[in-house]
Length: 218
Image (tube, rainbow, N blue to C red; front, side):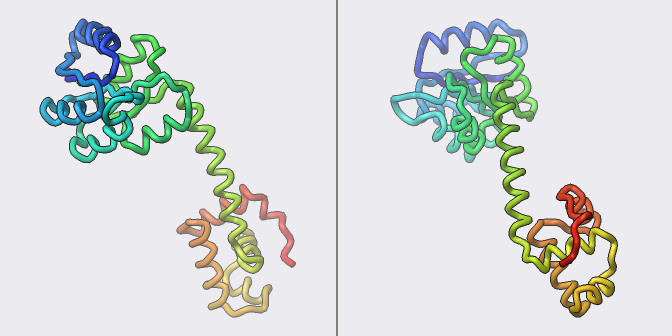
């Protein structure tokens, strides 16, 4: 039996959710709250498995603040955010606060039930449009991040990276660039630190993706 605590400032919404969840054989609504402070008090008392948390509650503590507080005191309780806002700002802030997932209030009942079961089992749940936004943001950040990391390399470090990727040993690189082997090793170490890599194969793979294997050494 999944014990659920409902937190929403609208009594009609709570009543509808309670009727839905209590009609299921594997779920039970153990309590209700209308704002964040009451939610914290009830959660500490009832220790629910899942807490359905509304984001926008004008009276008392808001959903995000309550979520952040509860995750410190009841880390085992999964918090599923209920929101009418299909907005990436709310999504990211909810995740940062410690929520296990987000469901739109306009979602079908089946989606809400699946989400509750999923977060109760320790998994995360995001509604489909949120998943796309999160992936778009992640991929965009990775692309920007990768470019920034490469630009942090000095010209000499880029030369050393390219030669390493082409299979040259440290001694060969030192002869090609007219620097000592110790200096080559120092450059290699800095390259790996800046690119956050630990092995030579990682450097080779990175250089291949960046198109560096065709680069000429100046």
